[in-house]
Length: 363
Ligand code: COD
Ligand code: ZN
Image (cartoon, rainbow, N blue to C red; front, top):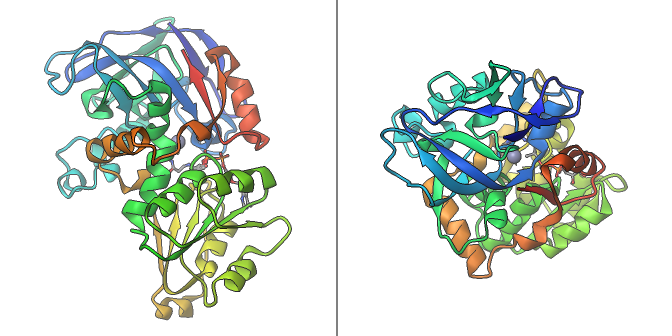
């Protein structure tokens, strides 16, 4: 089958034939319908974050179950699924506590680039090829753990469903699950890309009264307004913290950092009021540190991270599907461009240049 293979950071992906083995116990094969192009993949491609290589990247996908391995009970061939990039084991303390986004076994598999059993189903010339986050969906097919799929309604368009697999769940979930944005509140979102736009729409869904979008590209700020932003700040021109304090004296109730930079994490923290909450969604490069004024903590400010939107996948993703089908969640507006797999490096270049909200690869 065709797949986009990552060989090393700093090099483009290589679209070529790779071999996909049959699913083993508690695994299944998904025929990928669409895969979203996310900045987390680009972190690996640009060499900012390491990944075992060679590997098939792609962690935002949806498709149709084609075959199931021994012991699979949750789905059968023909079912439509969204891929979850955290294969929650269901047995560790986090899974039991209802926090599968922090699953220990899933996190370990992702770090190794393997499936849950520590091995891979992808081969090139007989040699192992790694799977990003057990999903590896920049390929015509993927073998994934049963724990990596969320069954959805068959009338949900699969290209829209793919977006729920990362950007939408991560962004909307950060607002609704992690911050629990209260109706009437003031929210700041720093970084309005594919994920940040979903924090904006999550805050709007939660009933925020003021949503202040911050980005360095005017086009992103226009998009943010489409997704529910009431005010915009171009932080290449204006200091975002001063602008937020002008719009919301004392600071905002919540601020989200959706880029992964120490300086913008600092801006998010500084933009919230006493008792407010700053939520970091972006992953900063390994070793990066942020410092905050220690005395500000006595103002009871909260600084927290949000991983995968604090989601419980099989509960939350079908709800996002329902919201879309009810006309209450914007997904069509997120898709700026559609590429074939062969165009994947162009899709990442468009992301680097800030030209798109989201691009998707369709098969
Ligand atoms: N100030 C304001 N905005 C900025 C700045 C800045 N200094 N620098 C960049 N931006 C804007 C860009 O113009 C762009 O609009 C936006 O930030 C970034 O958007 P995208 O579309 O390039 O990136 P996303 O939305 O696909 O991904 C953002 C993440 C923060 C999720 C990603 O980079 C990341 O850190 N992922 C790892 C953490 C994570 O949750 N991973 C789960 C899978 S994504
Ligand atoms: Zn992602």
